Length: 347
Image (cartoon, rainbow, N blue to C red):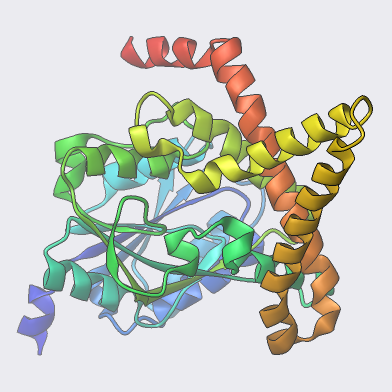
């Protein structure tokens, strides 16, 4: 048995954290309960100068639960620098990018290793399911909205139902040699840094396999304000990718900004051309019907009380993403900020 364990690849779980004391214990607890042998797992908690209990919690957890935890310093505090610090300090054959704001299913690591070996892929990823500690209606409604096709436009890592090769996994497991071949995380990107890395390795010929058999649980944002900020910034930095990667923007990314532009244009036009008001009402009616139709399964599974928060979550997600996308075009293209960042990267 010991020789069999020794033949298993060592897995390094890299978790950049900054003030994640509320969630980190649950994250580490899910790792301690893995079906994969714990002596073939190392956890690197990359501390971005936390001012809460995150660091001490991680240190004490390892001592009490037999989990091999190392604290890695991240003086710059941001996610891309944290990921690189963790990857460069890791000893494993397989690197898993995880976050303190999430939990693993009990067989998460075992399944990642299994599908890496079974498929021969360079990286694998699975399904990320939104969940929430707060049982109040709004946080739960946000989570339910994020788990729907209408909410996120068919992101495979959120709504995928069958195994296939993709180019943008979430909480992925990577073979170590990928970082030797393609380099590390772009530290200029405070958002979408994992997307950029995945696109880079895919463009270079790496194969990334998705299967819904691999599952993790993400603690979604509990307020509309934090939800807005998340998706506004995600859309803004998506624009930075345009020009680097042909597939950086898909149809689902274009839908929110085009919808907002159409609503604004028709609203203005209706002041001068009365038939435009009917087109505006039709457009808003189609959106409302699609939103309600998408929320019906939530109603059936969880009750009608969540429907208002689900519907409002749709509006927040789509409006934030649409406006963030438009602002990204202004910021990176009109103000030419993308060029300045790329010159700095080259230097």
